[in-house]
Image (tube, rainbow, N blue to C red; front, side, top):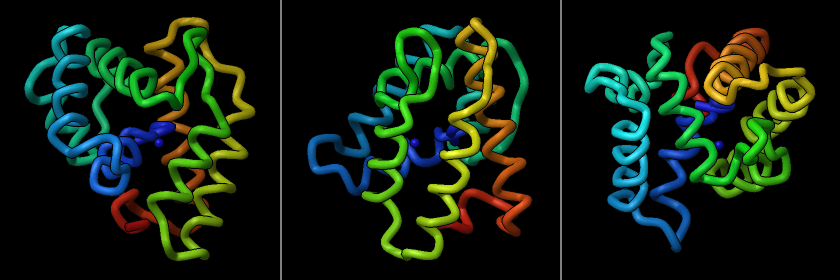
Length: 143
């Protein structure tokens, strides 16, 4: 789910689609991760707006969100099937979904840091790079 992400944008957008998780519940989880990581309000707002930040707290907040939404495992690796399933539930446009599937396939193969916070940042960087290479300037363009 900006997912890889850089998948955080997928995760937060999923709140509107997944019946078992409301937007308020997802926001509460993200806020709990903000507190857990000691992230600032600016870090949190950047995540919500899909803006990049590089503070250690931001990276850890995103790793926490990825884990709580099931797209990052306890060992800090992307859970490809969960990310694919989430993208399928979010994107009704087949062409856009195929773009995301390609990005997930590529980024899932990364050898990432053992530090989960750094791994989250590495996945996010991959996501952004791959989207840009496919002509998508912003994750928001996918929705």
